[in-house]
Structures are given as C-alpha cells and as structure tokens.
Length: 267
Image (cartoon, rainbow, N blue to C red; front, side, top):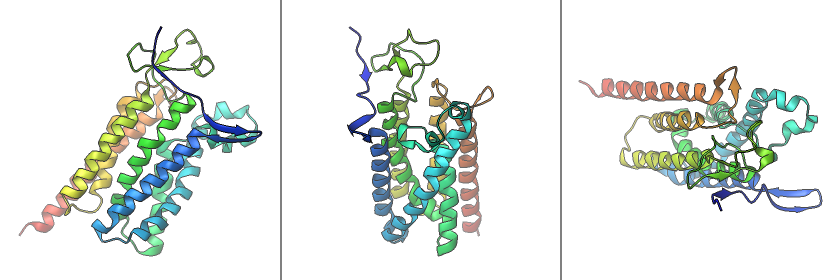
C-alpha cells in the first residue's frame, strides 16, 4: 500500500451554511505571526512597535484585494462561467503572493508618505514578518489540495483527490508537494534575514528587503517550474517572470546600497 501526504480536506468545521476553512485560518495565523515578529524587530531600528501595528492594517487592506485581483485576472477563463460572487470567494483559495506584495508596497508607500516614516526602513522590518507569514500560509494549499507539482513516487509525495487533478492526469494519484518545498525554502529565507538583520546592524536601510526579494524569488523560480497549476501569460509562467524581476531588483538594490554606502565612507 502506497503512503504519502494526504490532506484532510479544506474544512475545519461546517454548521449549515457556515464553514471555517483551514485556508482562511492559516492566512490569519500568518498575518498575526508576521506582525508579532516585525513588532519584535522594530526597536532594533529605533521604531516603536505600535507603528508596525498601524502599518500592518494598511498592508492587509492593500495586499489581500490585490492578491485576489492578480489571481482572478490571470485565471479569468476559469471565473467567466462562475457566479459573480466567486470572484470574491478567497476562502476557497486563489490568491497570489506577488499580487499581495504589489498591493502591500503601494499601501506601505502611502502609509510612510502620510506619516513621515522611511519606506526602506519599514520594508526591512516588514520583510521578515512577510516571509514568516508565507511559511505558514503556504500550508493552506495543502488543505485545499492545490499548488502541487508533477507526478512523483518520492517518499514525501502528496495524494491529490481525483477531482483536483489536472485534465488527462486522473490516473496519477501522487504529486510533488510544492507547497511544502516553498514553505521550507521560505523558512530558510527567514533564518537568513534574521541572521543578517541582527549580525549586520549597520546595513543601509532597504538591504533586508532587497535580500528578501533576491532569496525568495530564487526559490520561487525553481519551485514554480515544478508546478502544474501555474498562472500563465501565454506559454510563460507568470510567477517565474516576476521572480526573475525580483532577483534582478534584489541584486541591483543590494549593489546600489553597498556602492552608495562605500562612497559615503570613502575619504
């Protein structure tokens, strides 16, 4: 008898028309854990923890709608034949982290502009909390039986219910648990960010955010190549294109910040 990961299903409890879903609970848990971590880091950069509480409200308001809009736009053919309210049913899954990051950046910029804070400093404080939220939130894909890779017989293979398998692949029961790969990669990125944050306290503001963009995007580019349910732009995987942009921006940002710092320190 074959063994592997098996999702218990998306529901925690359902009473009549009311349901509590793992996906929603894990997203909420990720937001709370990420907020607490960023608040813990704030005094290290001479920022009051309460400022991060206010910032997170702005980030959530900007990130979640943009994450859903991003997903729906690239999956429009899927939603075109569904009831209109399905566009807003994020509790059923279907949000994109790249859309969330774009929405969060816009909201964060508005928050800093309105309140007179340094955007780069706030990005450095938010980045570790963001990646921690991603570590936790990725497990929502496990309970929804989504975000999986190609068929495999590896010991850690994931059983996907037949109703969730890609067209023409009903005969394949086990797939790569790419949600797990990304969650573990993100855990490593979190460890890297925290090490750099506490070990190199005199880094230029923005360095931690650039390191996040570089490290997370590198892993996402690799893992996205294993997935079967990627959002697509024609024949290209959207997340890989965005990840390439993240790698370039992160690397160029680190180079520019270090070059700027070296110029200021030179005689």
